Image (spheres, helix red, strand yellow):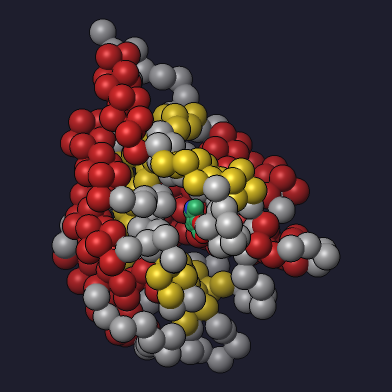
Length: 291
Ligand code: PXL
């Protein structure tokens, strides 16, 4: 008999970077704080995230299959499979196998297609990874590209000035390929007084949602990982999609605001430890819109 865990479980397939707040070093604290158990399948060990020069990198690809085999022997099961930064063809195949093996009827798969930011592909991401990510996302229930990744997934040239109607079409195209929910984490918002919004499309109900972002002129690596982790945790806690989006936007905004006022190297990411307890306090206001 398979005994159900009293705490929900996520299989988290990301790298672990020692310095700077990205990937597993934000996924684990955020989901743990939200009462969710993270079972890590690390893809690589880095001395720091890849936006620092000269980082040391240990590829763990050749150990991933052995970890999965052991999990199978243990009879492990997961409510959610959540992948992020993937660095090779082999890792993409392994995530596909993980989904085939472990996805359950009531569970879901979140793929954060980490490929680039600010209009540029990350230096460590090859064109082959971009092509393969286009195929991997078909297996996801939820994907969370930023604007750069949205363009890369569709093979289109980046354009920061893209209108919302065009972004809607792009989200529909990606949803057609497989995922039920497409979330674009940094869509330009041309309405007066606004800079960016999070946009989401849910095939189930055929609805678009929008949560305006409170803009601060700062760029902290890892906020995308924090966003998708809070979104995943909120959905696992039973929130609706728009409330989960609201909670993720509000947490990241608070993190950016709490960090911005300090003399602090932005590359280190947001000061997560200062704000983690916010994940367990009621949200002050909800700001989602239906559009
Ligand atoms: O935040 C995405 C991310 C994940 N993992 C590594 C990264 C980055 C972004 O820079 O370098 C190693």
